[in-house]
Length: 73
Image (cartoon, rainbow, N blue to C red):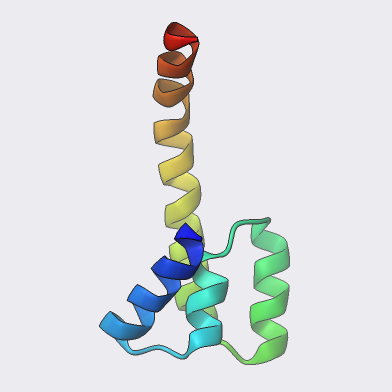
């Protein structure tokens, strides 16, 4: 649900097509998203940039969130 809302926000703010926005915000492997973007004619540099940003955010925020959950549980 959050991915779909992010895609809608991308379409509204930077005026990209819906497929590019969806591929940029969809969870999953970077290799699969890249292959689909190349085959579908989406804006590949934008998709890769946002996917790379997503990966870095997950790597940076994952351990602190896991520690918080472990403390609470």
